[in-house]
Length: 101
Image (cartoon, rainbow, N blue to C red; front, side, top):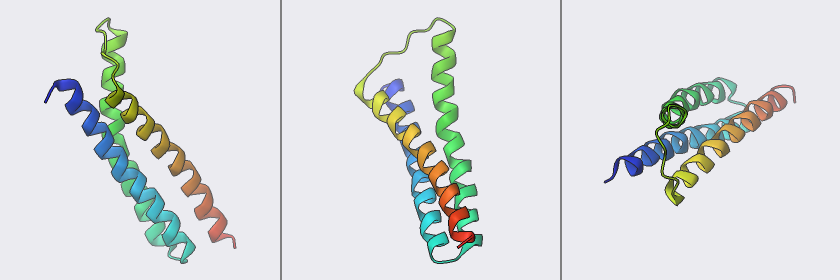
């Protein structure tokens, strides 16, 4: 597997796990289990960082003049990263709404 493919799969794997945690956190809050919801958000944040770190490394290399080959897999990885971040924001808001219900 080429280096870029491996990096993309690292991003996809990490942010995919984070996204699953954020969605599970919403469901936990919906059931009234706010401790579990907060635990899932924290775990999601910790694994999200792994994907974000890989992505940031690619950006740093590009900024240093090392061109990155843009491919469909990289676009998918970035899409998954952004969607996980968006779902985290929604999850935290929904958890607060369920708490105040």
